[in-house]
Length: 206
Image (tube, rainbow, N blue to C red; front, top):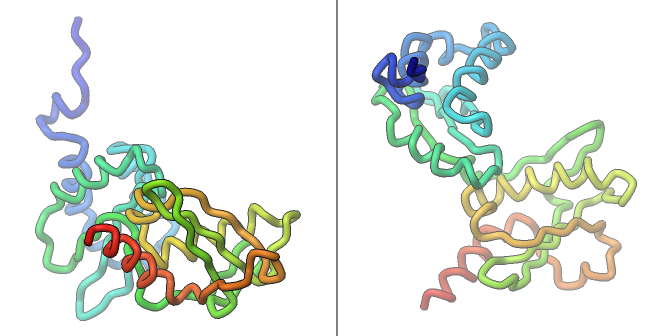
């Protein structure tokens, strides 16, 4: 006996099923602050039915609208699913759909696992890495014992500066160091990375 998938029974793709659920729960999702933990748990369960790599972010309410960011969580294999879910999104007047974590025009200080790093204390150096760019990031307080914690913050800083898509498709090696590193000479403030990065790839096309 043939076993029919959920999508074939309903006549809808997983993406369509997700957006149907989203629309039914639109008011709860738009006002998720009323019960954040419960609502996020339900939303995570539904978006994982499309792909277990997918996750999401919400923006603040601005002029009656809220951003909903569809992200692959840095898993490049899930990028096509992000594109598919984004393309199938319905037109809802209170929502702005965004695919992949976007660049942020204002970078934020970060705190993670009890450690805090101010963005003004983050510097970078850029290197050619084949067809991609390699990056050294210098984080105030970085040390090898707490490499995992500072590395997580480093990737969060880079995601904010470059956005998820460019991070995963155009960046090769990433190394983390403290500002006392022998490699620090010539490092530039993280706030300059996006323009420097774009300039590099623009010059390659000319």
